[in-house]
Image (cartoon, rainbow, N blue to C red; front, side, top):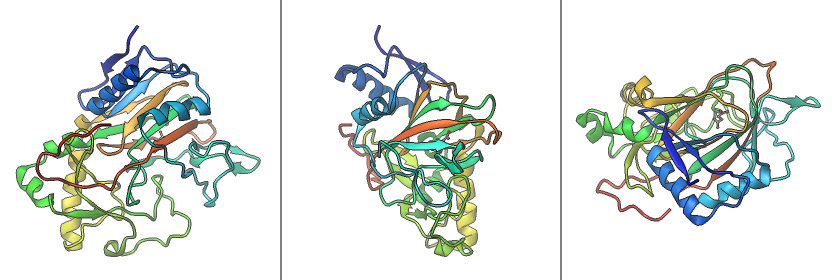
Length: 296
Ligand code: SIN
């Protein structure tokens, strides 16, 4: 049986069937998955039984893997792990030490590591243990967020950048080594264009990263806050969102260049263990004219 693609919502997301990620996949199959990914932004592949080397091998078929560990535990240290490409997302504590990042708290809408000059292009998250309730992950479509903007706002933001805060984790905790932001005009983090050209599809997306401590240089704080609120309202409108309720063995892969995500909190006494990989990304840019799509 070949690859099947079943859309999961009007906004974004598709379920891929007919693949076993534990087996070597031929180039044609990878291309079909890639094409579906570029069209639907987020893919769900259920009922997989894979180990870390298989997750790393599958992820690496779509681009260069980021080797930098990002699963810093709350004390700023990273647990020793066998595979540098795997980040553990978990609330589980073993021997008094968290085995991964993010705990059980809600994580607000964000693009992974957008405070970096070259944020990761994409992330793959594989579920090993999940709580009976809670911990759902939602995604929003940033192409569509751009497309529904009023024309005057599209024109207004096409030359603007926003600062992507580096001080907070997506769960709202202060990152090790940073001071709390008291003046958003001094927020540390990368300055990225608000409109972003996707380097593969050539489509334009809104690129917002995260709301807290964001600022648009060149505007007053009041103007910046008002414009950001308008953009965020478009991005996170209910009709622009798909939410995934996890089962063990799910692999979800999302494209950070055109989708944001958030996670619901869950009971701290439940266990949730996810292993994540991510692909290296480009320096975000906006090409006002139609950008020519390039190879994957
Ligand atoms: C993340 O924000 O990368 C993690 C999402 C999740 O835990 O579901």
